Image 1: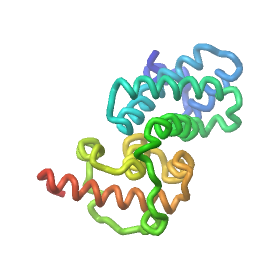
Image 2 (image 1 turned 90 degrees about the vertical axis):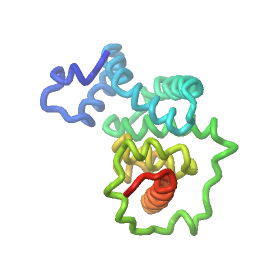
Image 3 (image 1 turned 45 degrees about the vertical axis):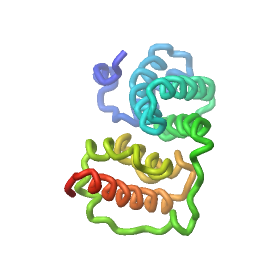
Length: 189
């Protein structure tokens, strides 16, 4: 079921409002609303997990684990308008369970340092996706959530369970690392 094709069912409602409405309906037992919600968010969730883990098979398993957690916890969601950050928070926990060995938070002095990067505006999605594999996990997940899933910095901070300033510094560091990585591969900024 493709929710985007059924936007006409929710005239005058933005994406966040539509998701909130679907969450409430699903919490009240509306199976169609639940199917629409899952249908709309399955692909973005899977892409996030795939980009974080780098393996389609593992991404399938982890996505399924994340959806099981979402379905179990959905009745208790008290802020339906915050569905997207809540969903990615659950997915992130599933991803981090798989990455435990390779995920080590950086020294706080390093991650809280913000650097202005004028190259940030010229990176396009294709270049970001191609260079993601070469980035450390904390920077990669910040880029994925912010640029590829269009979450606001505040929502990224909620999902990553770090302060907004840390998200900004990770984004800055990630852009710098990505630029260096892409320059080494011959891309021009």
